Length: 113
Length: 111
Image 1: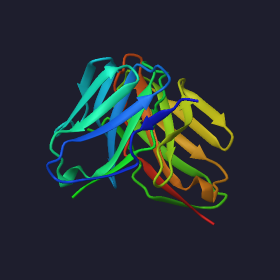
Image 2: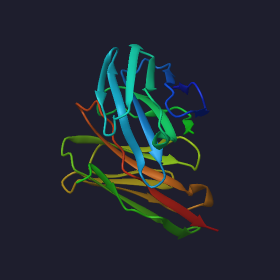
Image 3: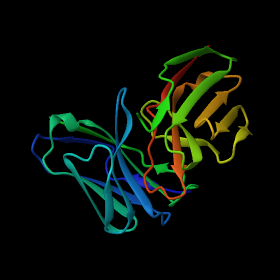
């Protein structure tokens, strides 16, 4: 079974802190994604990566950055956390191309106070 | 125009009825279409994928695809309370690195 593991299930951080969300997948997938999910807004793509050290902005990249130093690991960084970044964050991975279904991690519920 | 649009819901159906979920997409290059189910507080999980025009059945679920109309649907027959969840549509093309989802349709099955 594909496994996508996010480092934390729940996080509480203070405004202005630098926050790291880590995601690891064990299926040698090329593609990795970070989404945030808020009530009524669905899954919104923050950043994605299609190879090591390669990254692309998604639909809502402002206030976030990412790092992919190894194929299996994709990190989301909040440079200076703000209360409007309180959300559920979901990491996913997939093979490249049309047949690439996404596998999701368990999600990280981040609260910024 | 959003890339992927789903009927907004929420959709409430009685137990045993058919729930019908719709999804339209803007990218004509989309070749594969995935339906994910997400229970409250959980991550999305894949329940159906369809690649060719027509119908694909898997148990109580039927996906229907019409690429000319840029439309894909999901039917849930004999709906059960355990089908109560949000259903997300995701099209993908052969050269797509990106994977975008519709906003989802929330289904509630009334016992």
